[in-house]
Image 1 (cartoon, one colour):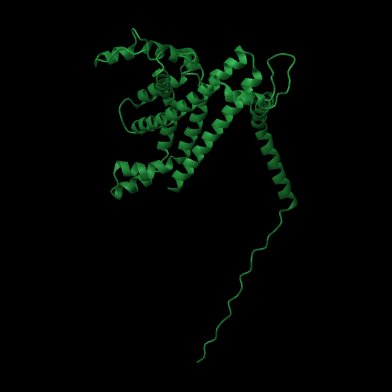
Image 2 (tube, helix red, strand yellow):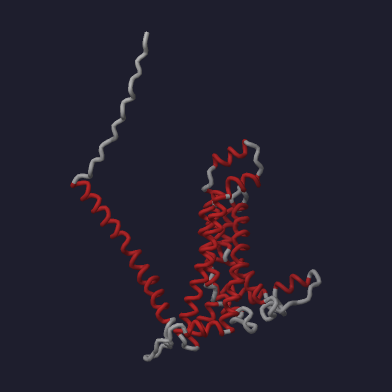
Length: 313
């Protein structure tokens, strides 16, 4: 008995049907509706972001100083910045402020958020207490911390005196002035980060946590292998907003130290403010602003690389 082999039959591919006239009209109407809905946001971005950025770039190449006459100076403002010791000090201080404040505030915020994500008494009170500094005016916060750092009757020296430490001139001592501002910056920025982290922690898959628990994973293992990977996008968002916020620090420094002693707490925005509105050198201040935007872009790029490396791990 001979067996016959059947040739495999070719599977016909589905025909690609071109969209009809009504379908194309529907797609065009949806695209138009999308552009209409996007129009307010695009107009806002153009008026308050794109146009100001272009204006700053153009003004940075001039000697404009709020007067009627101005001239094109090209890269002269940028060459002057290289020799400006105040600008160099403000750039170093701002970068140092960001490098210290951002990781510490993110770590503390995540730690507090993990604690607030547990079932504890008075949870609502603690959430509100941590968020209050965020919505409080910076001038009020600076005034409170000026009293805390007061060399004579401040809370900081009073507390340290209990342990036998000598009083310190926190904001007038060059060795502690910038660090004292960093403490205030970290404390003030905790609230927003805690709320964001808390929302992200509550969105972590409960089934994955329960599976890890059934597999015998401890708290630390569940955090490292389940919770931490789930926080990746949120971590990047918090990092970007923290970078922008720390580089824009101004009112805290202006109220507490005015950039002193000397240039120990002078930051970029304070230097830009003084050049633009006190010395009326708007072109020069615009060049500083361009440099600041480039530094922020570098920090954001580095943060993006760190996020990619962490996601690959």
